[in-house]
Every structure is written in structure tokens, then in C-alpha cells.
Length: 296
Image (tube, rainbow, N blue to C red; front, side, top):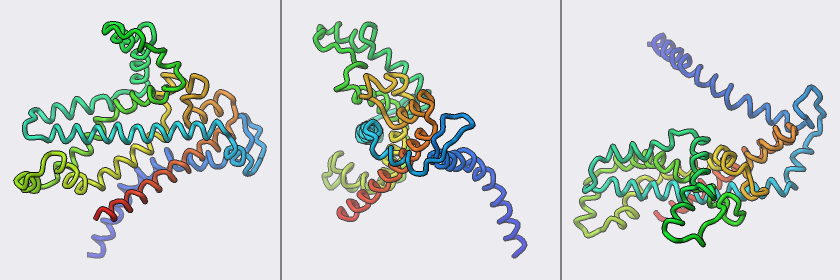
């Protein structure tokens, strides 16, 4: 019996070895390398000058970094509401008894999340184009020429504009997660609530949300983590412009590291992104758990 347990443990360790090795190679090693390089003044060549915490001290005082951080927070709020909020509404609609071809609906809504973010950014850049874009064309068709804008060059609304492709692409992703959680809820609970006179909105608020709160928290965590490192869509659509009005932390780190060839400070920026992301996720989880306890 003891030998059997030992062999079983060896097989488990063997199966876990490969994913752990991949994780260390793809995540842990680059993270520690970035931390190491952040202590140096380094332009990417063989010469490196140790500066201690100078890069982090400069980062704390860097106005452009904190402006980029505020843009990431805007994306997080917009996408939590837009992606998860709309996904929940659509899931409740698809889950209704009168809706047919449920699998087909979920498949089509999930499809955009499988497309490259660069391709999505290019498509929406064309849609927002001032001369040839679909949006301004539709405004002209409906006689709303005054509403036309150079959408990708309007600093006041640019963050809203670039958040639209992000929201659109990943609604289906969160729909699949929420749909899988909702299907585990006993249908008799809904039937009893319906007999008691509870409408769709009351059933959603008082039955569905409390029963899938853990799944919602996972969705929020994924959403925050994804948008704190947003890069692809914005790089393709605006490259952080006009000026720095759509600059995000990952974009700022990219420009600092590879355009300005300041690898040491760019590594400090990447560590700042990592720390702030963990901080925001941790605060969100604590607040969510407290709100859940108060609701109970």
C-alpha cells in the first residue's frame, strides 16, 4: 500500500513538473529578471550601472506614469461594467426559456475573443476613421454630419473610444464563464421564485447573483488583470496619442524600453505595473468579500 502511494506521488510530481517548468520559464524568470534590471541604468548593451532604488524613486515622481495608471483604471472600470455587466445581461437573456439555439448564441458571442487583439484594433481603427470610417459614414447617411468627429484624435473622449473594442471583444468570453456557472443552479429554485411572483430582474438580483458571486469575483479579477496590462488595441489604434491622452502603463513601458532604449527604467515600470495590479486586485477582493458579508 505504501509503495502504491509512493508511485502515485511520483506520477503526480512527474505530471506537474512540465507545467511548473513552463510557468517558471514564461512567468517567474522574466519577472525576476525585470526586478534585477530595474536596479540598473541600462540601455540594452553590455554596460550596466548599478543605481539601487533610483529608478523606483523616479517612477514614484513620474507624472506620465501616473497619468498612464489613471488611464488603466478608467479601462478597468469601463470593462468591468461593460464586459462583465453586459455579459451577465446577455446570459440572463439567453437563459430564458423562450430563447432558442442557446449554444449557437454563445458560440457567436465568444468568437471575437478568439481573434487577435491587433486585428481587432485594426478593424476598429478603420471604423473610427474620419474620412472612410463606418461610424462617420452612418452619421452622414442619417443626416448627422455635425456629430462627426476625428474620433481617434479627440483627447477628451479617446479613452472611451479605445475602450469600446476591448469591451466588444471580451463580452463573449465572460458570457461563457457566467453561463457555465448559471447552468449549475438548480432550476427548481427559479420555478419556486416564479411561483412566488418574482420577476426576471428580482430573480437575477436575489437568486442568480448571490449563487454565482464567486464566479463573478473570478471574472472581475481576470478583467482587472487583463486591463491593467492593456496594450495591443491601443498601440494599433492610437499608439498612446493624441499626445499622451490614451497612454497606458504597458505602452509607457514599451516606449521607455524599446523606443528610448532605457531598459532599466522600463523594467522598473514593468515592476510598477505588476505591483499596482496585485494591489488593485487585492483591494477589489477585500471590498467584494466585505460587501458580500454585509449582504448576508
